Length: 143
Picture 1: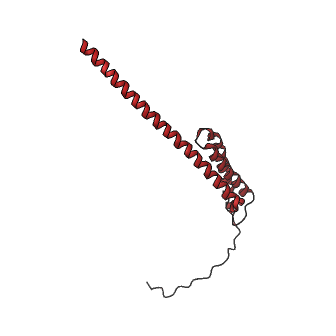
Picture 2: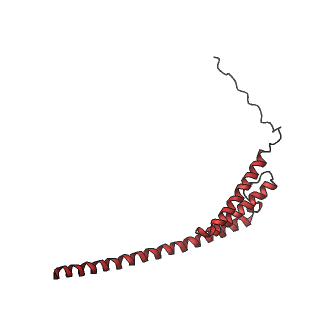
Picture 3: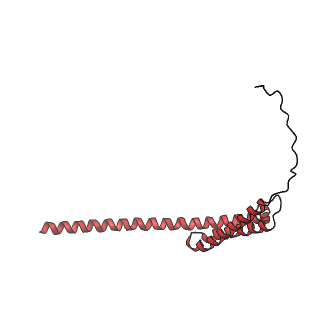
């Protein structure tokens, strides 16, 4: 076997074939999946904590994906709305983040209340057990 003495690298050429319809089919499938996810999240929203916020976010992504599947433009993401590149997308994300933080604080307060009630219940239960044991011992001593 002879060693390779020189390697010639050809310059990059532009693509000469037409784009396949697979990209459009894939975008349509993603839009359909996003719409199904939005419908499912709308049904499950009342059951989950912060479900309404999540359902709204998923619905926005589904609408953006459906819009991108209808009229795709080169250089844009099919899952992000065109306005997300401006300040509106950042503002919406900031508002969602603030709402999520408020839900987290409310959930933390609920956890603290539950822990306090658990401690109170345990203390009362222990006192009642000691009183019961003392009364039972006194009755057994009398007999």
